[in-house]
Amino acid sequence: MDQGIVYLKRYRLVELENILRELKTTERRSIAEKISEARSHGDLSENAEYDAAKEAQSHLEFKIGKLENLLSRVQILEPEDIPAGEVYMLSSVKVKDLKMNEEITYTIVSPEEADFELDKISVLSPIGKALMGKKSGETIKVDAPAGIIEYKILEIIN
Image (cartoon, rainbow, N blue to C red; front, side, top):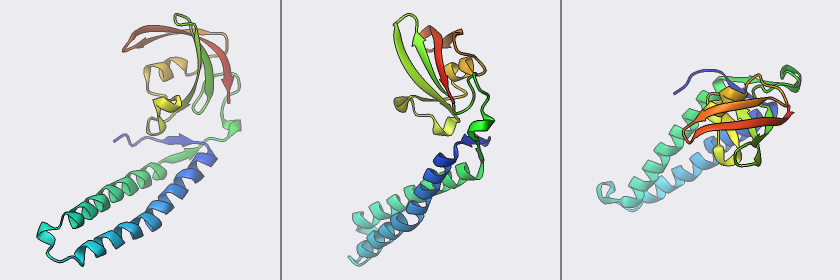
């Protein structure tokens, strides 16, 4: 697991802290109740309900540990920390794929926050690396798994 700094905006830190609180309180309590209920059914060696509840508990604790690790490495980026006019961490960048003639807006995030379906791309991804430090109007070429992609930067939203 990458142990580097995780850059977040303050609102995202608050969201993640709320998720962690929910996991540690409501979710833990719910699973503890399921384990208790399954125990009441007798012999644990052949109790599928108990095994499922224990497995759910294991998954929950893994998720909590992963989130705690991420939160321990957070550095808040305020809008004034982001250089105006160039692509930086947490910038949203509107680009045009010159071959497909399509526009898309990407947000550059830490690897832990990347979610391609939400157009949040890692700063370490080929596109993220190619965009960093660039300005509006520039054209970049990205060596992606699908081949060379050429983008024109239309707008940077910080």
